[in-house]
Length: 199
Image 1 (tube, rainbow, N blue to C red):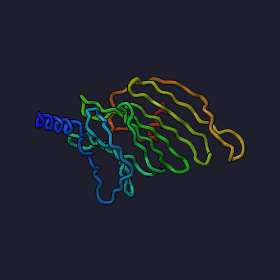
Image 2 (spheres, rainbow, N blue to C red; image 1 turned 90 degrees about the vertical axis):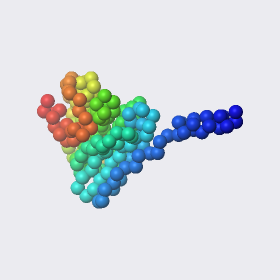
Image 3 (cartoon, rainbow, N blue to C red; image 1 turned 90 degrees about the horizontal axis):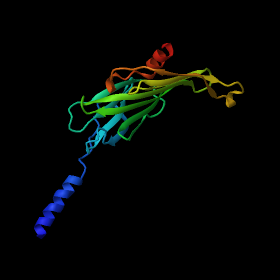
C-alpha cells in the first residue's frame, strides 16, 4: 500500500512539474536584449519569445516547445531602449520604441494559431512623434481580427518648449479586412504608418 502511494506521488509530481525552459539561441556577435518564458500556445508547456540584437539589426524570435523551427521577425535598427515582452490571455505583446528624435512607439499583438502552427499578428498600434516636440505626430491602431482601426493626427500645442504637448485632431475610424499576417511578415512601424496615412 505504501509502495503504491509512493509510486503514485512520484508519478503525480512528474506530471505536475513543468518541462525545462527553452533556452534562447544567441549566435556570435548577438546580444540577448529581452526574453519571455511563457506558455504562448496554451498547451501547458513553457515556450519562449525573445529579442536579440547585433551591430546592424535586431530580431524578435518565438520558439514553441515541441515544434521544429524558430519564427523570426527582422526589427531593423535604431532601438531606443529595450523592447518589452508580455503574455496576457494567450496574447503575446511586444512593445518597442525605435528611431531618434523622431520616434516610433509600437505595440504588436500576436496569438498562436494551432491549426497553422504559426504565430499570427492580431493587432498593431504605432505612434510617430518628436521626442523634442519639434513637429506634429500621427498614430494609428488596427485590429487585424475584426478589421477595425483608428487613426489620428497629433498636433503640437503652442507655448514654451517645456510646456508643449500633443493633442489628437482629425481622428477617424476605418475598417480594413486582411488575410492572416504572420509574425515573420509583420510590417515595420514606419511602413505601416505610411500605408495607413496614404489610405
